[in-house]
Length: 387
Picture 1 (cartoon, rainbow, N blue to C red):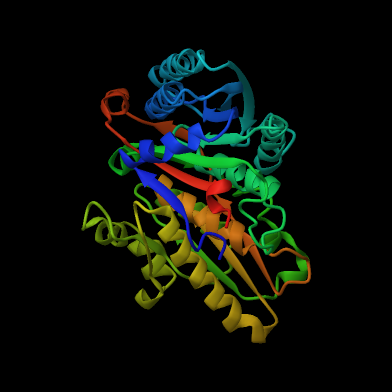
Picture 2 (cartoon, rainbow, N blue to C red):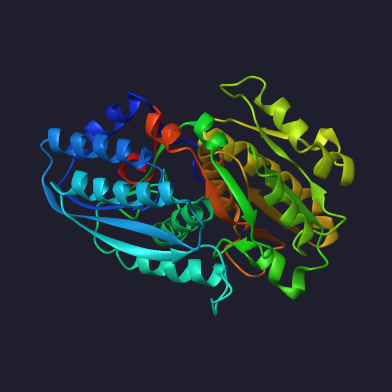
């Protein structure tokens, strides 16, 4: 388990992490954020820039990469908010360094000559070209769609931690890689993702379990991570050929949660497709911590290991995760998939992350601008993990 011990802070504890972290050495910073309509990204960047400047840190170089995700239908109010948000992020970062934009297409269009999966891979490669000699990389997922930030997080980890089984794998790269997010699970539940694409998008690097012909006879275990208003996306994944009728389904529910009835409400929302139509046993339900991604990582990783070991007698298995929940649980799922992904082609199991990406988002500008999110920071690599 890569993150058997982990560094995670929320709320005021984030500054307790940033203070000593930013003072230790001269900094060369790459900050990656979303060029989207979610203004919560401003909260994180403003606090981070203020912490760096107040620490007296020597910033040798700093750049902000704004990821503009194309292919979505947004109403005029959200389009306007997107431009205002991007300008605000550039202004906040200006005391540290310059900004640039990278475009990624996450939803396929009729005019596109490549699939959404290929487009995401090309966009992620463009972002990875910005990773050079930095001492610190910060990925802010507050305003980035989940399939894109999962691709970015796992690809950066793959660059920084190429050999997961080596001792001190998380500290050898010498780079402090953080994932930060302004989390408001209540607001996430209000942002509607509509008209999901009929072709599931596969997170780059996590597709062989559903695409390779050599593993199609292996039993498949599906872990859909449930979140509000994502039933249509789940149905699109079920309609595709990714999840066979005989698949073992293990729904993942947020528990513990700030809303103690949230898991119960999600069970009712997904009752028909998962429990009435597919007859999923309630004993298959897994619980993942809503506000601690590392605990969600542990819970999902342990379940995946149990299935891998149990199904080895049948020749192998396919483990498939569909992240439909809130951001922190989704981050935990991404870490579990990265840790679990086989290092060689001879492994008797495979990992895939399919997602039915929506083509339209609907959200209230008032709800977005009035949100008071809490900041969370996950330190994934760096000197904190050195012996």
